[in-house]
Image (cartoon, rainbow, N blue to C red; front, side, top):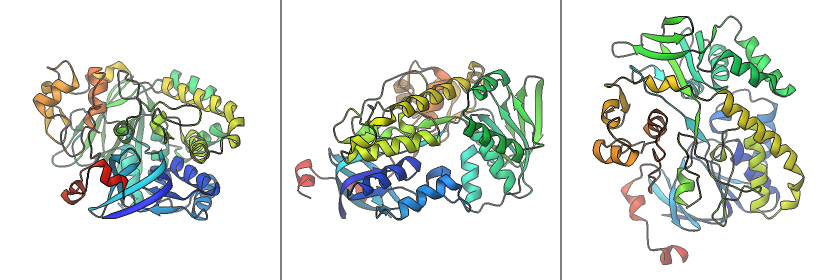
Length: 428
């Protein structure tokens, strides 16, 4: 067993975590940053062969900060109020901290439809990550579908890697996106223009979404519902994601307050300094609300300063926070999921892939707890991370996916056996 100590422990090495770590280290704190990936960067920066100027700035700042980085390490949950239980290479790690910053990011929202479990149907960001990891995509036919700005970024990346992008299908309407675009800053309009140039010649379909994937052992074709009827695309990949779901499980285990709302977008409650309702625990980035890269970096900076009691360095940033919050609200409005998507699954459609639970099995229940107890939905290896948010949207359940228990991720028996009474941990 490994025992570590840090003034500031940060979980998650995406942009928010990198910003928090760099700032806290500059303020002379002993900082430990852990992530389950081998390298820092998160989904957005990890594996990028040519980082843009902003990414390069923060990665350079992080690399020169003196922060201790522990990759390939999974945070499993609290062993005590100021001790985190983690695992690396199936071996337990106890990390004692004075302040904890949770920058655990977000994951894609998958909505089940007939054929969505076929090999070749992936998350939008998931396929991008696979390509960054070396999966060949050149000359492969790809349909990108779902909702959110991520779709265009993924399509542009896949096209630059040699993929043949047959279409980008956005479930939101053209009018909705037009209103959203009208309020973008000059910088974001420039970014949108760059993506448009990269995707020149690729059909962009509004008011369109996948209704069926077909194939025999692997994906062969995708059927999209559009404003002009149903269209069929023969392809090797469907990269599909209906927005992002904040990763709040670790915050829940530490006791942080999460307002309960219908749907999948429950977020960690924080104050203006990114402090949660639990003393000594802060949260930054997408777990506090989906708002894009700029907001994640901003909240990381604020959290890094707040964790090291350097509040005077961020008191003047209130106006920027208001602007970023406004953008986040407009993002949520523009890409809100249309109610027709609740009709995607057929009765026999698999909803919980881990336990092979069909939609007709959960639709008989009035809530997540009942469905989970009777069908084992959400009780497989992913612990409801995939089916929980999907069911929350499909059934409009308040409690779907919120029954979180330690460990957050599957762990070895040796790691679980390392848990000891709190008084023993406090002496570590």
